[in-house]
Amino acid sequence: MGLREAFLDEFASLSKKIQNNELQGRIQIFFRLADENTISKEALAEILEVTPVILVSAMENFILYGVVEESDGMYTYKGYPPEFKDLVAMLPDRKKKLQEAVDNLVRVTDQEEARGAPVEKYRRVIEEIKKDFGLT
Image (cartoon, rainbow, N blue to C red; front, side, top):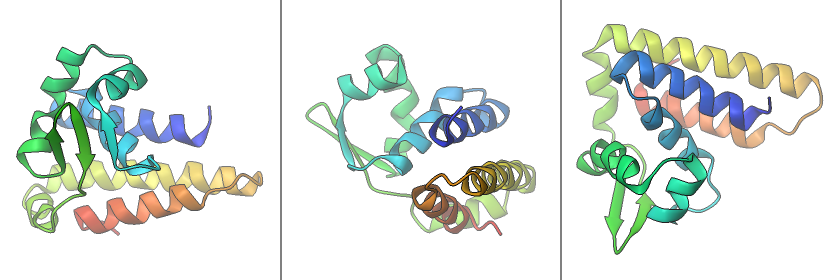
């Protein structure tokens, strides 16, 4: 399994524990790893191997919190607003689970780097997650 799959799987597992919805974790990591911030609804559904109806349902919270904007069948990733740090701080169990997931991502990234794999993009994503959610 490559780093991309490890990141997608780790956040799918985390999202399953926190929200009972693996797809939301996959969506978050997809956008964080994407080279472009905008993708069509159909393309994203195809990449994530879900129907557009399931995708729309999973995207509701991202749109509600301003993480993603939807317009004309396109999703644009805007990033997490600073308030998310405060929200996570009020939920210590969720913060602990997020920290464990990030620690796991650091571990697999370190392993891949030791094997000589390019890991810059993954280190950037880890730092973004830490910043967005107030993690160490």
